[in-house]
Image 1: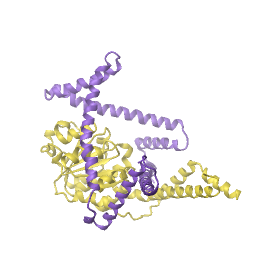
Image 2: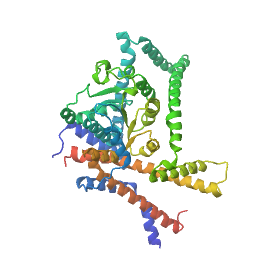
Image 3: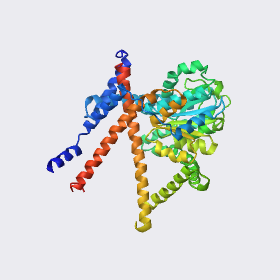
Length: 283
Length: 206
């Protein structure tokens, strides 16, 4: 009995660094030897894809790049696959950000997709454009929606918006057929819901961090958000739907391995807790 | 593939390792990487913000267009710095009043429709018109919403039907917290996996 208790005590007091080592080994092992687990596609991702594919070719789409380097691993693949899909369906898009690091991360993915952009015949300024950081958070979002050109006077490279063909006829938010908000927090979904969706009826789809996805589900259920990508998993699902498996799909096995380790330790912790409780050692 | 010879890849790889050492113990390598991150972020933010301020408030004076708006913004912006003077600090209240007033007005207007009325409208749907799965989902949502609100009803003792509803609300909240925790684990793991991929494939060339 005392030996058993001592064993339970040891498990209960396991050093957190042991858990980290097990997690590191599991992730590295699976990254070096991929298993190829299936990735079932969920309804919010299908609706995200449908919101894009149902638009007529040549439609103008606003992409809010509301994330920075810290959330690149989750939001980055979401942005990449969204742009791939927009190019595939022959859409035009405007990349803008209310975050200081937004334009820089957007530039990373434009550079990454240079081959796809060139082969599809898309040209900067005519089919897509990258705007600079717009200071002001929600106030800037409201100003953009009301008067786009007075708020964003130049593109990232200093060219006046009046001289950029894709923006020539843009006055306010109503000139966009769809808003895509890829976000890691604030400013993000709520700001665009308040300043773009509700007052101007612009349909919006969202790419969210895994941690934030449950928070945005009520907006998806109510129809205020037409589709949603939840974390890296959402990006992997869209990559599969788009027929272009890339960074997100290649990480899914490692993510599953990491989740498995986490679940095992949660179960272990709970089993030990209840065994100790039964012995009357824990209240 | 062989190990990378690109100095920028080496810097990124070493800084990644330095940052993750905090998981084991606080150390000078971690603190060095942390200070580099904070310094670079602050410098970058200063430059991009300055560029925006320059374009919006200084450039109009050279082009002669929109000088009134630019001038007003510039004056309000400069007044913020009177916070540093005991005698003139009251002037900064003007700028803060404009900031707070604008933000509150914009947020409240949008909040009322986007996050209150639209959500309530979406909650009140005739279930007979829904698909069977959505019907179950809607009924479940209704029960959990009422249960959660009952849980925070402290003027009634949580006994009998009120107690049952409060318990349902508690389980609903636990499910929501569990989903949020699951999302947190996924986000943190994704960041970790991306860095491990960088170390293994981009840096070490495995």
